[in-house]
Length: 447
Image (tube, rainbow, N blue to C red):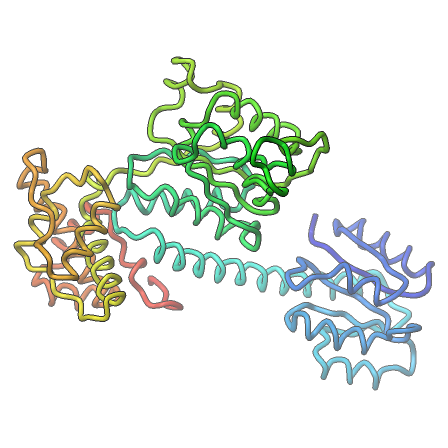
């Protein structure tokens, strides 16, 4: 299809003829006899063109144009005028109409105007999408911090999956940030306006698990005073995040599978089915296939939950992110406690880079909190840390990132700051996966 067209005219014969002409040229066409009906079918990001007669009962073409300009000033509106209405058409152009065509008109005249208007609309929509992508990229980079290739890949995967409605399984060690990734999947999705409901399956006693997840009616069991809305029902219209899903009792796995299959649930003590529309994001530390083989997890539920999988790398595998993360968490902690953020010395940075961080980001946050309060130096180096060469590589990557950020991608300034020749700088940037374009100010071109 060449694009979408909405055509409004109170004469049925004209609507039929125009629809036929445009559809033969590859356009998708919807016709309306009244302007108010058409308004309900056109949104701000409508990917097409609107054509309207000027003289119509109820809401005329100029009134329609005024409302469309308020909705989206960039939406091309072509006005169709009868003989003698040219002054009115000129007024329409002043109000923001794209073009006007005088009756009677030929198919060629109409098609020429529609094609030009469609080209303009396509460009506007593409630019909006690019701006939205740039905005989303900037927003997610402030939520999933890191300059490593692993984090860049993770952010890209999160944005790609956020736009879908598939269930996602997140794999990662304790403290690696699984809930933060789940929140990003929700925040950048069409469900963002709905609730984000998180439940740690390992923290719920088995005796109340069913009530917590599915809810209950008053009197459903001893002590059940009053009706309770469960986490699944509360997440309707949004996202349900089930952390440590491997801890879910097998009996509740069966019931969750049924909810995912039928998109309905029954509260404990009730026979009434309640429709639920939700996306499930789950997180696990162990390999769930191993849990399936051990009889601790249902294979059919795993396939329902693991439509797509995300892996969060442990902190020890992306050490070049440690300085940036530590400084960020120190700054946050200092702000919370109403004090200035203390600097990180080169010696402390060496200790940070050498530590294995078995508790991952959560452990780093704790170290940053202590540093901000002046309680101790950062975590000591562990014997199982990186070699000196690996630590130097990570430190070099961080230095390059800092210089590129400080110089806003200006290579000449980076060369002067780091005292490196152009060829050496290029080789180091390429080795560490750093691109000048990622550091340019918004709106700049990487020419």
